[in-house]
Length: 310
Figure (cartoon, rainbow, N blue to C red):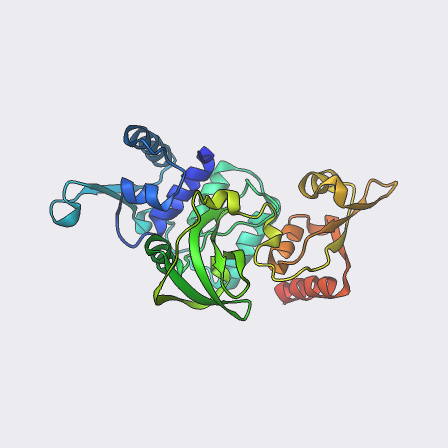
């Protein structure tokens, strides 16, 4: 059974993203493995989750359908107009700056966390080294349909055309991920949905069978910095000063240490095959970490920082 905090986060995101109200059966179907199979236990768990979200001010609406195929069912949704803050008239750069500031400080404040949810950001804690943003994802409804109907999809990712059997979707640390079988690489792959280029297409007439017992939570890569990696890429060589060395050891592991210095700083190897995720991890260390190599990774980080300043 899924962790309660993760399940609440997934439920919140699902009810915010849905284009039409969902029944409990549909909710449990979308959140595979996160609610009990037995109907009584499932209903009790859902009622507890619904009460918990309402307690922190999330306006979950519900209606009993009078007629049609859903007659008698209770269906749920979140009205974005009531949930989100009034328009603060922030432009894109101002919004990004606010989210970067919150990601960098990570105050852990419940009030701050709820405010950032309403501004479009995700969990501030959890997998702390990866900045979490929960944007509107245009392709999410199409992918949900593909997962439900077991239809093969096509899309571009990192400038490469992909044809994928969409086995499942997972919300982790504020980002939606697609896990499935990539036909071009003949292996299972994980893709962050907001990084898909352009539209997702349903390939008519091409269906698939999901592996028996597949659980997207178990299939998710342990290291988010490796998501979407297409080839073996040398790890980044990073210097972390004494103020953050203990945190780096916890996150990366002692077996990644290259050197330890008398002043308490350490040099570590950090996976960087997924450069955007690596940059997000690095941002969490502010001035306490420096990329020493490889040269192309160091140049990418410098260019990224200079671009933000500009």
